[in-house]
Image (cartoon, rainbow, N blue to C red; front, side):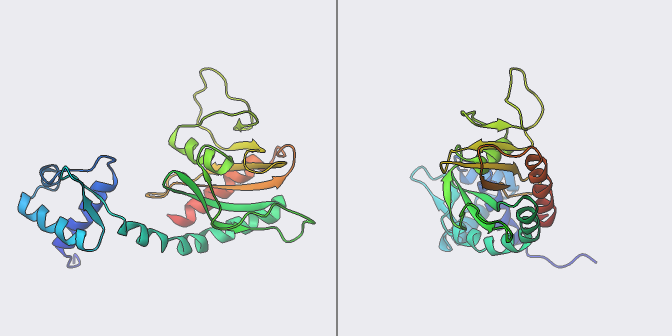
Length: 230
């Protein structure tokens, strides 16, 4: 037997998903067409969602995702940390470097989970809550790689080799040196196949170059984290 569901709630959630998938917002007429309902129903849905700050309407009347969604999103971080910690802990201990899970937060990369190795004499201090531009550092560049966009910079490598003309294979991991901290190198791989989440898993270490085995090991950890989040 099919479980009883709320049609109104279902429509409201569909409105949020539709708005989340567009950068320029949607009009009442566009939403009505996509939902297959009349404009009156859409007006009621938007009015309710606006009361909870989940939707806002601009001066042109186009509906967009509201700031209230950010409050809900931040509550997800503890759940993501819990799911990612086993893979991050294994990665940190195996490589002997600080491991992290980094997610997109607006135009920045935000570290939401960090694990430091227990057996090394020294390691890079990399804290939960650390932010940096998406186009700087291995973690952010790996996220861009997951989008199919990867600005190249001196000291950066893709898949462990310099990119060349006509390159078509997907980027599995990104290596950088000195972009966020002098003397520090990073390796990160994008999270692949996790609906609604853009992120990367990586390590940061005090080294002039990242050892050859680190890139593939980071890819393995990113796969483990992605599996845990599905």
